[in-house]
Length: 293
Image 1 (cartoon, rainbow, N blue to C red):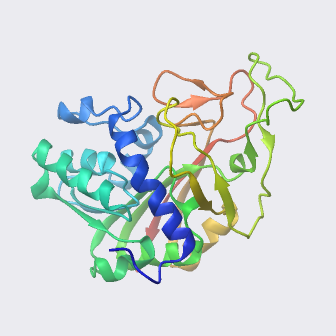
Image 2 (image 1 turned 135 degrees about the vertical axis):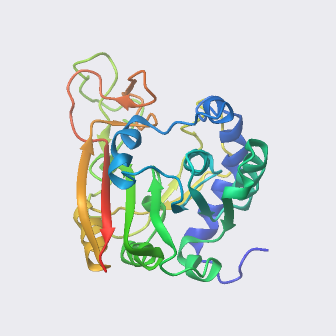
C-alpha cells in the first residue's frame, strides 16, 4: 500500500521505476548470462576500482547496496562471497531481485528490502552493521537531499567501513539531446549532434521531466514517463560525505558510462559508451571513502 504522506517526487519516481522493471528484465541491456553462469561481472570502471574497496576480497563482508534496482549487481557481490542486503523503493524490483537470488542459489547470502532510501534506517535498523556501502549508476539524481543521503551511508557503515559510489558526472547532466530542427555543431568523430545545454549545473529546484524513452530498450515507449529529478554539483556531494564523517580515498572522472547517455555516444565494446573522437567532457565519476572512527 502506498504511503499517504509520500512526497510527489517519490510517488512519481517510484511509479516510473515500477513500470520499467519488466522492460529492463527483458532487455538485452541487462544481460544476466554471466551471472547465471556463476561468473557475474560488473562494469569495467567498478572492476578496476573495487580492489581498493575490498583488497582482501569479498568473502565474509557485509555489503549494503542502496538503490539496487532488481539486484543484478548486488548478486554479483554475493557470488564473490559477500553477505548482501539490497534496498530499493520499487516493490516489483525487489520481488524480481528475490526471485533472481532464488534462481541463482544465493538466497542464503542475500536479502532485499523495499523502502525509500530516506526510510532506510527504519526499514533496516542495523547501525554500523556493514563493511561496505555500494551504490552506482543513476542513483542520487533521484534524491532531493544529498546531505541526508551521506548521513545515512555513514550511519550504516562500521568505523573503518568503506563506501563505493559511481554515477554520471554532474557536468554531463547539464546537457540533453538537441531538439529536432535546432542547429548544432557536428562531433568531430562523425555526424552525431553534440547535445545541447538544458539544465543549470547549480539548479536547486526539482526538474520536472516527461520522457517516454528508456535507456535499456530503445524500442520501448514508457507509459509512466513523468519523473522528478535533481541536480547535485560534484562539490556538494563530496562535501556532504566529508561532513557526514567519511574520508575521501579517491575521486575519479571517466570519459565513458554504462548506458547511452546521449545518442551521440558510441559503444566502446566493453559495456561502456564514450564520445566519438574528442573526449569532450567527463561522462562519469566514481569515488571511494572510509568512515572515520
